[in-house]
Image 1 (cartoon, rainbow, N blue to C red):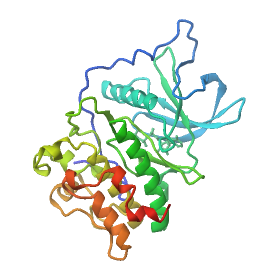
Image 2 (image 1 turned 120 degrees about the vertical axis):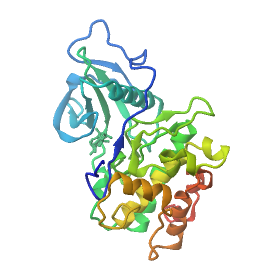
Image 3 (image 1 turned 90 degrees about the vertical axis):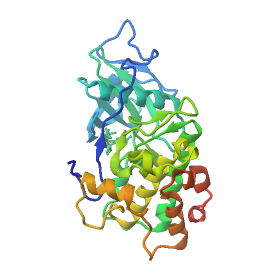
Image 4 (image 1 turned 135 degrees about the horizontal axis):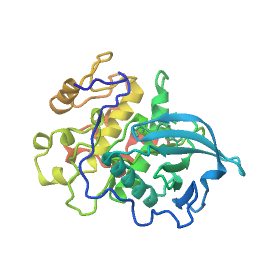
Length: 320
Ligand SMILES: Nc1ncnc2c1ncn2[C@@H]1O[C@H](COP(=O)(O)OP(=O)(O)OP(=O)(O)O)[C@@H](O)[C@H]1O
């Protein structure tokens, strides 16, 4: 039984499905003259060299590696450098390849920008990203977030989700730990390790990838939660469920699928998602917020609003 590390911001991870390739994309190769550290491919227009960067401190670490705050020696610009483990298992390697493929595709003010990607001859890969100086939305823990502040956060995240969905990318791991803030009050989506590009319109996306606490009912139990073909093909709705849970969690201050203070475990969580009522905003919240959450957290995927529809919801008008 998987126990949750933190009772407020949950992080129950499950493994990725098997993919057909574990090789780096063709553009991702080391030049013949490779030295200890080589710039391999650039996500943005600028090209960096790893030797131009100076480590300042560790920002955090996840399953795939460690993220450092670094400074560019000449420009003094600050960046975040994600160093991926060298001894990656095939699953982590697939995750990295997916992340790189998507980072090279996306360019939006609502997605954490990838500046460059480096690979050492030893196989160690580093991803240079824009630095988000306020960390993840988990850092809002213990803060009294008002509905107005939340509406601003929600607008940014939804714009990012809408951008991804227009590119036919499903993020599949929207949660507080994957949403980063900066002191310009911007919120951006990060971590594309379990995301998927929907190549064909009939691609299914019900695999168990991501953080299960934030998974929609249809991703946990595709048999029970979907009745119609429309439900089955609406793979993007899973991101809306995770987004709705995340927004509600930030406002109420605890994981909303379980009673406050209850220590969650796998079975309780799965029952709550699949068999319980969809979580609702507390009575004390505004009618607009209650309606917003209701539009995100409908158990049938086809009844959930899309990111584009939610961007016109009255709750967000207070940020316009
Ligand atoms: N661009 C960034 N700017 C500032 N801090 C960052 C940035 N990217 C990551 N971090 C910090 O580094 C931590 C680790 O990030 P990373 O993406 O490696 O792992 P994770 O998302 O927490 O876990 P996992 O990869 O296992 O899902 C984050 O929780 C965050 O605090």
